[in-house]
Length: 419
Image (cartoon, rainbow, N blue to C red; front, top):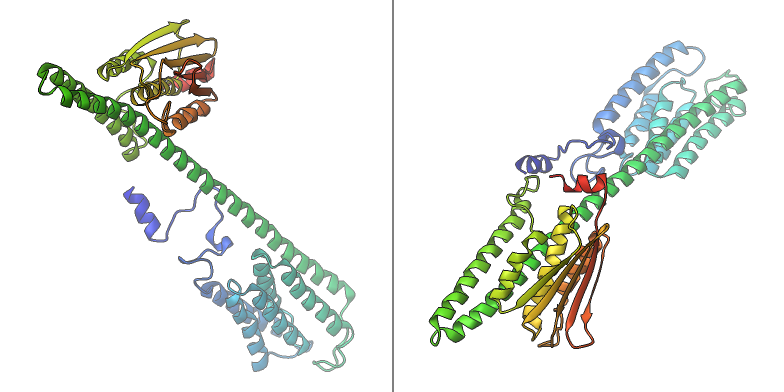
């Protein structure tokens, strides 16, 4: 945990598998991609454009106008406007293209000025301004066609002649290649963003499911134990003076119930502190029904258990869910039923467990069968395993809970039972 906090606080989070490089997504300092201007890359591009243009001017001596101060200012403007390509990509694309058109109209040498146009249009496409990027590229190409084939007599340098049409095809192919590459990067960025959003949503769902599971466990443990403690504390208080021995027995039951509740709560909370560690004690299952019957007896409830069929291998998840459903049903009998008897029937069939808990009633309050949270927890446990549960009043005035939980078979059951 300390290592994760140190990575998150310094802004140097390591790139996850499948995540795009930060230079490609435009991610910068904390606060988003627009927090800092791209000075290093722009300065490097400016050096390339200036140096390359000087080399091109020497190679094109006599054909194009020599580089002067105005030419260098135009080159500087074409590059400098690219500092805004992350914050204002449309303005950067059109600004660089306009500076390049003026540069070409003045008759200066062909060269890396087109590189500045390519970077501006690339940034516009990647940021989602596709129409603006295509318009900027088309403006440069159309302007060059006009200047190279119709306006060259009126533009410097003097004595210039028209350019061959094949040159325009090369320039058009270059422009299409630049925009196509930018489109590819844009699509990849969108795919990476979708994957990142899916991972975050999956992590959030797992966290929500884990919180729900913890809440369900704590509810089942505490509701049952506190119900037993509440009943026995009332008995102890009532008999404290008239029957001290019976009061002592009630206090003994309270002690045992509270100890068991503390142990199970600690086990649940331990998984929050160290989610990767194995549990210190096995999760409860149907093999602990005798303990549940004994605890119910301490609360004044007589429980009879009937078992049908041969118990097959039961995965820990289904075993725990079955135990909690029976536990919650008996807790509701203690808290909300006037009956002091209950029947639990466990049936093992091919690929399933059937549970049935009955009490004779009547209900002692308006919340017959429970206040709602316990029943909702039972339904969630059953639904999580693909099972069903029904709970409601019986025709004779009692209350019944019926649940059916499927059991996986073959290798799936073996894998689920593995520690």
